[in-house]
Image (tube, rainbow, N blue to C red; front, top):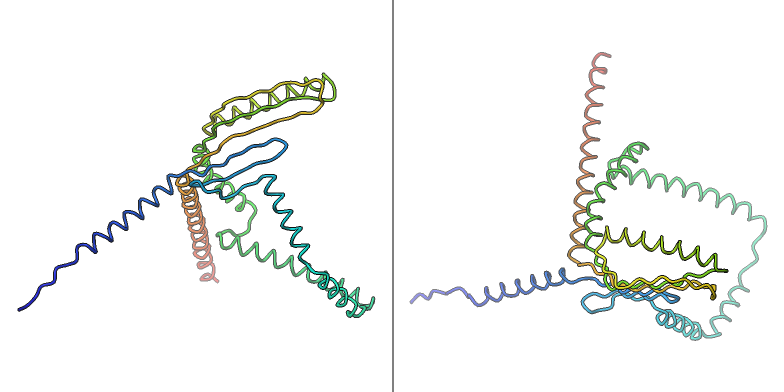
Length: 274
């Protein structure tokens, strides 16, 4: 009797379920936002979080911990290491003063060689980008690069959300007149910056309080806000920028190829006539 093996449907179903789970995890990861908590006054506090995990933080406590670690590492170094270094320095022979001019010449030669290498490196980079090294061509390439980056950068900035924006400023000066002048300047700067932010990012202002202090002589400030940006939006804008840059690169290479082809076609009749 011949037996017919039926395909294992459970295995295929498990594979599809795993694939769907992985896809859902990637989609959720892209939908999550990178959060930056900013608090500025006499002390700077910045904390970057993603999915509830602190990726990067700046605070006075962190700086204190770093200083403590450095001091502990210095204390761990034994005095035997210092004595070994001193003995090694004593064993080194004294160099002749006659060798100093030769060293100066050698340093000049190496400096010139380094400059030549840097120039060759720049020429190699321009040739890789499809540029001949002409100043006008380089300026045009920079202009096209800025134009290609403008749309992705605008889209990226437009998706930034700034919430819980608090700003407290106490303007002061050496005397009452100076304090009043500083108060007017700070008001103008703050409201100009707010107008720019309203037109570029999604801004949610909670409170702004600017006051004048005619006695203390010290200007104080405190700023706090929360900045959010979706990871998927950031990655999409970066990929869009790379696509536009690659398109620009191909365009420049095609132009250069056409130029070389026309130059070769012009030189051939001259060679035939000769």
